[in-house]
Length: 429
Ligand code: IMP
Image 1 (cartoon, helix red, strand yellow):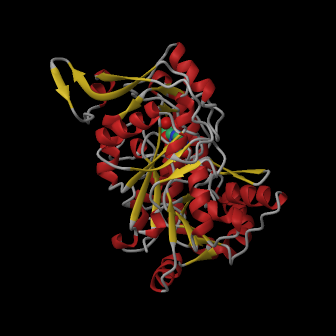
Image 2 (tube, rainbow, N blue to C red):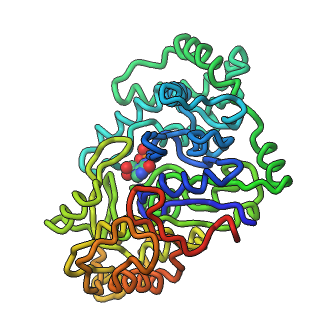
């Protein structure tokens, strides 16, 4: 029996929520291992819709849920999300929610800095979620972060605070901002510590015990491989490694702990924020994809950019992330298109490429090479078996598999949980 990691194989927003919820119901423990409250996972359970940004999806069904050390944690956002869920009848307790005591904290000045930098960047801005994710990871790597475990030792914070405030005060001065009010910061931390600390735990131990006991662990990725700090469209990326390999390091288990890697990919492509997007359609077809797919961000409400499926990018994502099988989502959005295009390679000047180049200027310059397929007029919405799919839709899926060199193990045909064609059960491996 495999543990499963679910990750986005494009630029995030691939429709992970529904699939993670389906898997979370059958998992014994669900783990977030990177990112922070920049994620946006929408879960529809019965007649209720839950919007999660930071908490692992298992929480909604009472499955023990873990926030791993690889996550950056905004304690105030945590409190707000826990309280919002409580109003919807979901109560997080230290039995159902464990937070790694080694998580680095996102502090109010991280959020300020994220916004100040974006505002100052003009056309070069990254289009971040402005939640302080990047600045918090910078402080973690710079070894000046305040971590969850520090909340129990606030009186000993002196030298760490010196390093942290010296660094940030210099940055803030550059933006014409006042220095950090240390006393106010410590007072705020003291107040929130009482909320966070009951959830704090050495989660690496819980996870290793769960593994030893043969429990099923679901590692829930956020964002997508193309936003990975190393493998994504740098610098237009998030500040963490979003690949499946991070599941181990970001939670404190060995690399062998992840068995099946389920990559989620839309049947077309979307992106929020800035950065290159070779198959983007700034025309009526792109508009049509956006309207049919309801392509607006869960966290920021921003309109998503839309384009055809890019097999080069998903093939690369599958390779760098070791994807075992793809869940192809939102197939029904392609219903009714006379022709559907798939990007199979790129042209860069006189060269033909079968991969995405590393350099940002080249990433922006590549011209997609398309293959055109006949579309289908029937609806695929709500299909639950291959037999319910038009022949052309099956042909499209088979061609996608061929091009990305990875099997499609699940097809999602509507936001409803049951509207799914399951080819291979990841937990059954
Ligand atoms: P940050 O993660 O807020 O620093 O934003 C960096 C980039 O990642 C921006 O392009 C964001 O739009 C994108 N991003 C961050 N989180 C998500 C997500 O959950 N879905 C899609 N894009 C995201």
